[in-house]
Structure formats: C-alpha cells, structure tokens
Length: 311
Image (cartoon, one colour):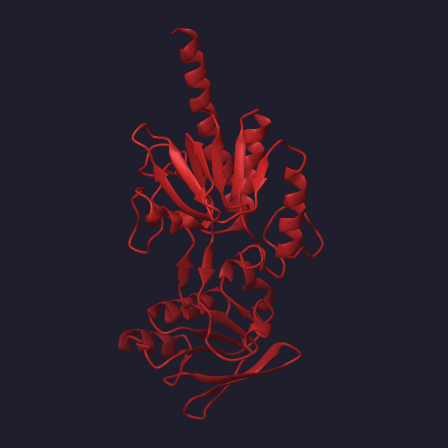
C-alpha cells in the first residue's frame, strides 16, 4: 500500500499533494473548506514570492486549487473527524459520513483558528484593521497608530518587538477582558520603550468604513488607534488525532513536535507540516515543509519497492 493521505489543503498540504502526485503516487487530499484559514484570510500575501501585484489569501488559495487540478489527486471535500492506527501501522481515516480510508503514510497539514476579540459587529475590521501576525502585516502598517490587544505578557512582548523594529507614531497595549494580568516588571520596561499600557479592558471599537479609529475602554478612556494586533491565542485544528489512538509528542503549547530533517512526528509515518508543528508559521515555509515531507515519503516507498524485488 503506497497511498498517502494529506489532511489540509493550504500551502503545506497542496505542496505535498503536488510533489507526491508528480512521483506517480496515489494521493488523498482532505479539506472541507478554506473560508476561515489563516492563509485564506490574508488581505495581501506580500511576503510570498512569485507575484508583484496585490494577491489576497483567497486568490492565492484559489490559484493553488486550480493548480492541483492538473494532477491525478483525489480531492475529498469532507471533514476528517477521527484518525486511528491499526497494529500493523496502517492509518484509518474516518470522515463525517463514517466512510473510512486506509493509508500507510499520513501528512497532517491543518492550520489554526486564532482567538478573537469578543465584541459585537467586530468582524468587519478583521484583516483590514485587526491582524494576528506581525510577519505578515506589520510592515505595511508600521507608520500607523498601533494597539496590541491581549491579556498577558505576550501582548507586552509583541509591543516591545514592534517598538524595537520601528517605533510607530503611537504604540499601546490594552487588555480585552477583566481576566488580564500584566507583569509589573514588564510594564516598567514598556515605559522605557514609550509603550502605553492600559489597565482597563476594551468596551467598544469605533471606526469608519471598516477602519478602526479609536478604542473605548470600560473606564471611559479613549485610545487612539488605527491598527490592532491581537495576541489571544489559538484553537488547534488537529483534534481528530485526539479522538483516535494516535498521540504524537507535543510541546507545551500543543504543537506537534517534529524532526525538522523530514517533518516526521514521534509516530512513525505520521508527518506534520505547516502551522500544526512546532516550527515557524508562514505560508511560504509551510509549502517548503510539505515538499520536504513528501521527498522523505517518496524515498521510503521506493526503498520498499526495490526491496520487494529481492523477495
């Protein structure tokens, strides 16, 4: 059995599918939807090579969807609900309609779902004035008034990073709910960096034409703001592994620990590429990880086939 399954059809998963297909291996690619993935929500992939004009995440995903149509990839637009492993090492993939697929090699290439500020009518600001990723969105917004929204030290570290890269006209940190906790020593460091730390959570975000203009806090203070970067954590999308009998090693944040030579997890023949592993999270890196993992899988399949000639 040389069939490989890939869960997730973002940059990592589609890259893996294309490489395997070009080696003439059977490929199953699972992905139910792309509407709320990190890459699909990007307003402009300025840090991905190969285009000079503005390219949104949805346009990028649509481009690679068209690209995989050129190859004999079996694209299954269903949600994977559980994966378990037989004693002989075969992975059993179960989708929503209880249909089961069996493969020897498995690549997990799912993303994450980022935390959101819980306020009414806030969706209109996302990926226009509210962002999650400095590497993706800081550069084009670096000269605007920036607020980092979060409830712990990560918010202050993010603001300090911004200050040391290039100080914007105004830089502030605000909590998003009453359960915030800011370290006093970090607050002192922030003052030296001219970062304003507020001690009251957000009550309201005010804007015009989907662009943030200011934040109103619960204590009535107004915070000048044009751009918000959130540090509200994330929800894993690889929980289908938890429902089966597969338990790859994870780090303290829940990311799958991998061997960065080939992106294999602690579970033999289970590879993790893209945002679900414990490496950096960028679309261009994810695509490369997908390629590296499939080169390893191709090598193992070829080794098995040549060994079969001697049996």
